[in-house]
Image (cartoon, rainbow, N blue to C red):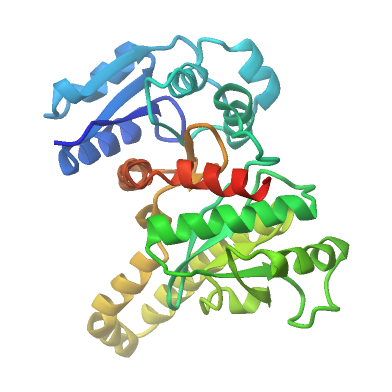
Length: 337
């Protein structure tokens, strides 16, 4: 048996915490016998939820934290002042090397601040990007950055491209992943100042497979494996992606229920629609890692339920086993030589 992968879970973060967090983590513990979970938060509430399940108690530890960081709070102020919050206490377990990873469905801003201030950035890393997986016609693509660095520079985007390539190859299993930068056209003369400045730098990178610009309409086609952009653009892409997917399925359902004939047809295509909907379900892909930190930090959707929490924890095990952080550190340090 290999060494246990220890994950510090913010049990109080998210719309459905602690119930969904505990339920998802228990499922992950049952699925992977090499997973150990620290449940961090209000102990009485966590134990009340745990009492509902059979779980391997030898691979669980409850760590009491008396405070919770709310979604509406100022991220910097909350991280600084709420020293006994579930998020801060859990991140300190990663900083102190007691845990390999941190997972939370709580405040994105607080996670970004805590990831950089408490866990810390790797030496040589300028910015830490959030990188979720998006479903495409060909499988999945990594969107990097989707919310951490709104005013990024060209050197940051080059870092994102390199980190994203390592992640796609090591975690998703895509060999020599294609990297594209989000642009308003395929021609190099198009784009804003940031894109025009970054393209030549990406071309010079020998350790990535840069294929040029990618237009937003080609992202769902899976034209590239790593989608590079600064956080403002990335967040718009992510939210539009989620909104279109939700609206599309709502409209399909409404149309199929509009007449007797369409209802009969709906029964025939129901299995295919279920499969398609599953591909667009964010819970299938786990959370978004904050790449470039000294330890693994992963953000789940605030509305995460048990399946996404489970898949995120299993994703963390894979990430840790593959040593992706070490490979990112090596790649970044190599670029400084």
